[in-house]
Length: 313
Image (cartoon, rainbow, N blue to C red):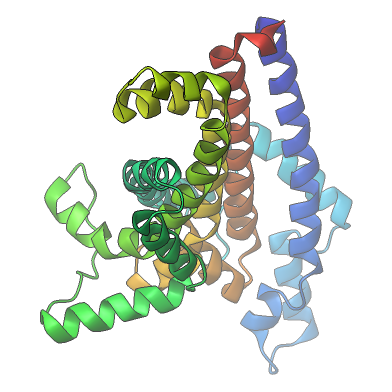
């Protein structure tokens, strides 16, 4: 187990390094840069050259990358070209908002979607299963941004209320924080609930065809015991993988929601930095997303081997 963890950590570090090169190259390949935005059409060639030297853009790309990578290894992502603030601070503050939103969505969707999937799978072919399947199809096909707009419209029209636009940290006021995140969380959670229910239903239907489950039914074991103690335990490994994928998907999909609800998260920071051609912030935000995705995959792999002894042999 220790050897596996060390090997996976080394592979994760290599993946982050390769991904950082791709991110750096893609950002530099984007048309336009902050110098063109600052100088406009009236700038002189001497002023533009001075700014390029100041920002280090006069150097070859590989020199810029090695200089950036050397500072990143020490935890320094540089400073924002637009704001002058440390990128590490900006990215960390934004990431905590996105991470909290994604975690809330994951918890709520798991607590609702998994029981719905268990119920639909156990009652496959029944009216209950049909209703849950219709719910799944409806929300899996509904764009998140459209659902968010409908929630905003419906709540403001019928309840004369709209979510606060100023973010409050949970450390300052947990109640105000949850109120602010309620509608963004709901906008993302409906899709994930449907995904959970569909995924769990499929695996439950397959598990119920096993001989040991049929034997438990024949012995009169209650459905709650069969589902909770036997079926759910057998689908736990693929469910953990699915949860990891869902969490990564949520983190990657908060851009529209954060912009729509005015949340100062990683997605909104990335969009604003892209518009401003703020390369250090864009690179820091993208690397943070990549590190999060790789870390979640690593955690899932470790949980795999911890839960299933067969994988440790």
